Length: 231
Image (cartoon, rainbow, N blue to C red; front, side):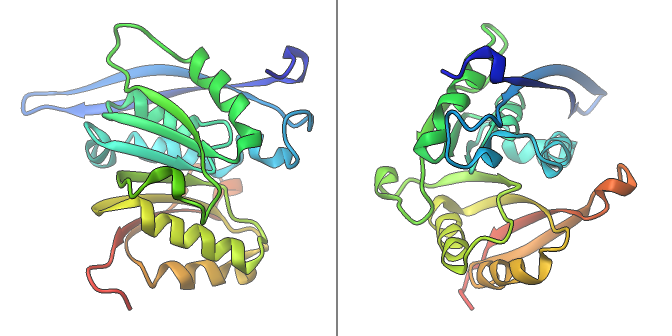
């Protein structure tokens, strides 16, 4: 476990809207995740930070239309880092949540899971597992209803992008959905290769642009569904 002196808490208050035939009730919940960029528990410290797309994705997941697709479903987060979006899904009533990252990043994920456990609130159970994109032996054909991804693309080699695309395709159920948050900055031309790849496997059902502030104007939230017929 990383020493407390290297941890930087990130706290968010999210609101989940639950609509009933008679009324709309809004509940609030606080999640705190620890960040760590000290380099003591991983080779690449960028995995252990809440980057710009992550809070926007969490807000999107909490919208009534999207929250309904999470309730009672099996959720997996790829490249989870701090695990914040997956923890939000747990609070939104998922059936189960699996947070994944490279083996070197799992210690911080487990810490964040432990520190956000609540007894008696109906949160989904959350487990932490290693998942290197392209290496799915440990999943033995498992499929998930919802796949959540945030801030994982930034000038990776093409083979890494292909491994991510193939992993998304392998893990999402045939009637499932992928929520993919992307902050394109100056790297869009390079990262366009990834979007060409996932077009083989997925249809883009919806694309939402963050409208919270000028600083967030380059954040996309993509809602992807598996193609019935591969192109």
